[in-house]
Length: 297
Image (cartoon, rainbow, N blue to C red; front, side, top):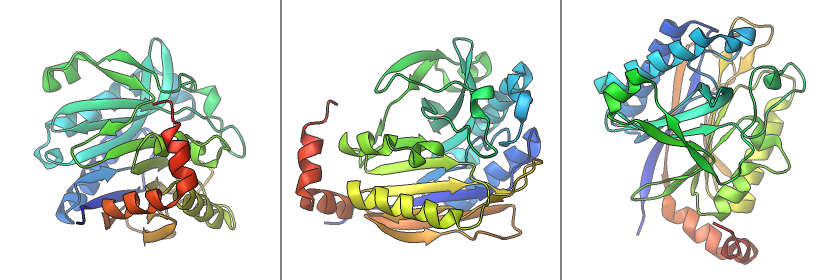
């Protein structure tokens, strides 16, 4: 018996510090995802602020305005009855992290900080962020009062965790974590995550997209599962061009890929996949099943 789910990845042309414009594009992507029948919408890295904010990430106003955007999303009726994952900076215990914020029906479910930062090429992430180094651990994060007033929550889990739903289990990684030899999707898949979501800010280089495709295919071929890759598109106000190509893959094969070069500021790509295909694939790979049985979780 099949257990199908429709998923949406978002390719957005965001701009650094353009909170109003970024909010409108995020909201438009959520509306399009719902119109296409998706029950889960994910987005690119730092989509709320824009990736290229540079030293503005040190400013408290940047963090404040990010939460104001989340508050507006939580209150909007368009954002009801769909699981949403957005990227933004979050300060926890006076340390700023590059995070994914996951929410559903006015409730924040998890704040997942980036665990492996990128400092090569044109990336300088450790200048502004710290990596989360506590694997399989969460702490209480005290939400801003504006969010508490909407959600009725005082604290939410902050850290390395999965989200378990009625139908499946979802894991999260951020950009560089896919490229690392100790990729977080490996342990997440062994712990039972059937959907892995990646919010990225990957800029264009010749043949770089072939490498990304190989990494995603390899990740889902070895571990099985569904991989949702989200990327920015455009210049963001910095020196580089973010190359789009958001995609969805399952068990080593791509089922949907967004355009690499295009003019629309918002492109939502969806795919309907069967969770039973993941379970059957994983159970057939006996060496993977053995490692999963030995997982610490």
